[in-house]
Length: 60
Image (cartoon, one colour):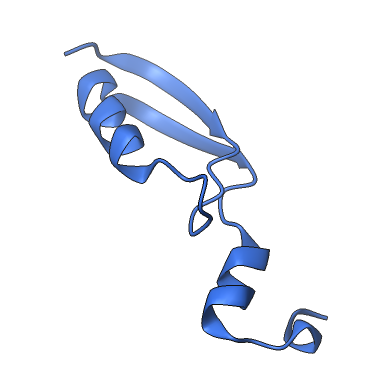
């Protein structure tokens, strides 16, 4: 296990078909950062809207 002070993570796109959440979880268990920073495109609002059947007007 590697201990790091900080880890910057971006472009996760959670809830999209391209998301690799299990691989990310395994990676985080190996690295164990004290401060994980989520810096961009963490969730995929389009995928959530599509999968939940939410109208696009809901987000505006």
